[in-house]
Length: 313
Image (cartoon, rainbow, N blue to C red; front, top):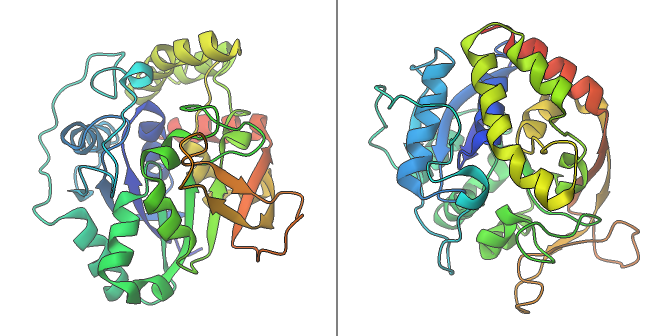
């Protein structure tokens, strides 16, 4: 099997960190061409730093990490320290990375890579706000036809919102960017709250990470132990959702997910619904389908396979 070439666009975030680890633990299936950081869960100086921390944790200081956009296209930056802590990776003590940040801007890296690789062979995996991806499409419209697929964590329909009553965080932070991406004509798959809220870090699952007996397992258990406090209090759930690893899992194991190819639009005009993903799940309009919207998953299979991969470190 030829590994699938991807660029991870991210704002780490403990769950982003687990997604990066899953990708780097899976070289037979995934070739990470680079990681581009964006402002989101925390500001850009922290997200680019956190991405490098995770690469070093995985023993992969060779992975190129780039800093992209430090603010949304049109709105002031909204962050999520209330969930992820002031560093974005709060919980266990973290050592500053020694691997370098690349000099090239992350948006330029996306454009250059898509132009250099064979057309239709690179998948973009955004785990945060879509600012870098939209900026790349604005700067170089020709790259749209060269993207194999965009698989993103973002949006919601049945679960509605987690940062406002109607909007999921990643889309809300930069709704104009999301709108640009949705209108690009690129093949798009959403992993929304509707599915990620089924991937809960229950105590037995956290215990399984810790029982791996490696540094990565201990770190993932500590990260999840920190950020799940917010979701347990907010939702009364048994744990916190591991949102972003669902993107990497879908890339490798689409058979454990279920969804529909439907129309998805981004609400931009009304403050009450700003950033809402208006998903025509029941196909009640004649708007053309433009995305695969995932609603369900086999969460037991997800955690079993995730834990097995983290055992490789």
